[in-house]
Image (cartoon, rainbow, N blue to C red):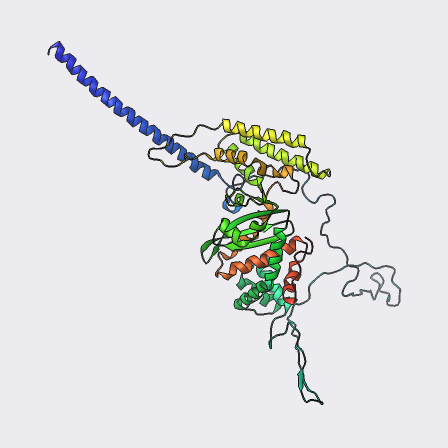
Length: 485
């Protein structure tokens, strides 16, 4: 083989190696992109698994038995148990007991002498608190017909308003049943069983359902009073949660203050639902809520964002994604809250402007630090449409920067709570009902539940005993929900 043929052969082999190298480079690039995609996906899945109630908005019931979460509450430094000044609930002797049983000795315990005529030198009092046997009490009303001797017209005695048919249940029994159903959230069958076992009153689940419908009808005007009071309030909290109605997802919306609660069920979650409910469209105060997109569309009122959500998200970013700025920002929000609480405890109604300016400046500096620590967005995928998806950290930082005024509203307006936990607490009993019953079995069920439970929650906030409140619904006019507002 000549030298020229050898050179030509080597050049051919070299060209083949170059082609293979180009192919390997392209294959390596594709594999690298797949690795990045898989790494991102694994990180998202790990993040999803790492989320629980202490670092996200997931409920504690989803944590499972193996997971032990840490609360966002800080240590108060107080010892466990009742604190100084706590009223307590220790039993004490009643000054006027219903019955007195005198225990006088007849003979001396030492020498057996007769003591019946000897005056007592002292008395030790002991009291037993118990319930009498609960039995139904039947009252018969007899309306007599009397003929007038002058005109021969027969007149019948007038029955009370609550006695409309030949036989019915009275307001106390109806009130207890309604209290068990929607105050203690017992199922219909167990409520019927309890009334039969304890009271000797046999009410069928169908009778209880009719009783609930009657109670809801009687509270229609009262519900409107609550809605009107919420529209006129200075600050309200709003939230929503999913419920099941005949197995289909619906949304239960709440609007509340420290003395008022309103619930409403709707097929939709967003603005169409809150428009139809009719509280937010006519509200002109400060509405505190989470970051759901429908709330800021009400521009006629001011807004405050719940910082409990921010604290949980920042904790997740610090613990799972190892971003140190998240811990600093979480601690700063808590420090702002402590500053406001200390000022409020000292009798102040607002923070000095220089303190607000200093705390706000630190807040924005920490956000800038967080933004600077974020990696550049990944390049768009081939044939990808729309914007490149951002990381959770970037989304949170953008929201905290854009809505800084709403985030720090608690600092500039002492009427606004640091969190919207009150709304979540008002929704908690709704979730308990769903755990017990699983779903509402009719379209009218959620409306009745919302009206009655909202009234119960309102009256409980104002210090009323719910059993008495429930009785009053059927005894005449329900107690006013505006009495202590």
